[in-house]
Image 1 (tube, rainbow, N blue to C red):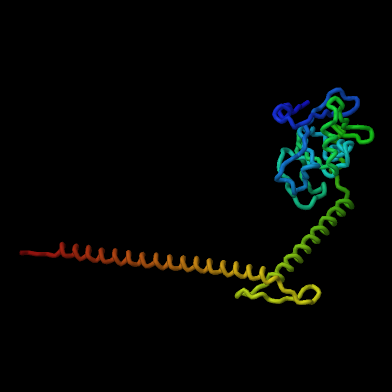
Image 2 (tube, rainbow, N blue to C red):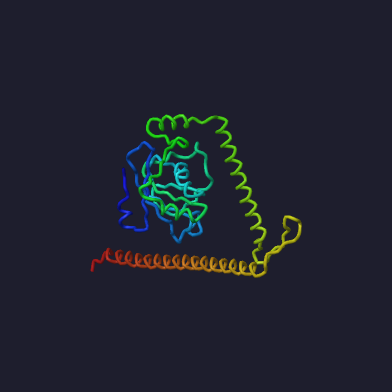
Length: 276
């Protein structure tokens, strides 16, 4: 049994709950919970007033088990289990179990989002000496050899279910691509400008003429002209620098050539025969 004593001693905002695997179990497991309040995540999938942060979740508790376990305190909106605490990361479209890598087994942390804020208070006020039962007759949890046998059987994908998962994913993928292409097309039509900064009038979807707002188009035209001017000045600077370097190199070569001519003339004069 692993108990998070450090978090209890160092962080007084944590509350301790007891987990009991089954009604026949004697040993109990301790988890630490507190209200999740990270101001940087107030606009993400973890609302400040409805998110519960949980430490020391045992390996046999999956997201579904945690959701069922904490549903007694109120409706659960979502459950997220991670190896260590961190900010919410949007991993894109949710993949089927056939295409997701196997998760590492070990103690994890969790973020439980309730539908109502009162559920957080109910969890924190739960008596410490009343354990939460993980596995019951209505919702059994597989462990040990039974869990391995169950996972082995679930690892075989049925062809019809696999094809259905692939078709669903490809339909969502095509839909996202079409929406992205349509959005890019609309942005290009709204921001279509020629080289001199003039706004070209285009036709919208309904056939009517459309034109961006004058202030926005003028601002973008000025920014574009400024970028072109800076790029031109930078190119001119590089061109001048390259020419100046070439001139200095040619002057150095001419200087060395004259020095070599004088040295050769001096050697020839020293070798000349003078009998008297």
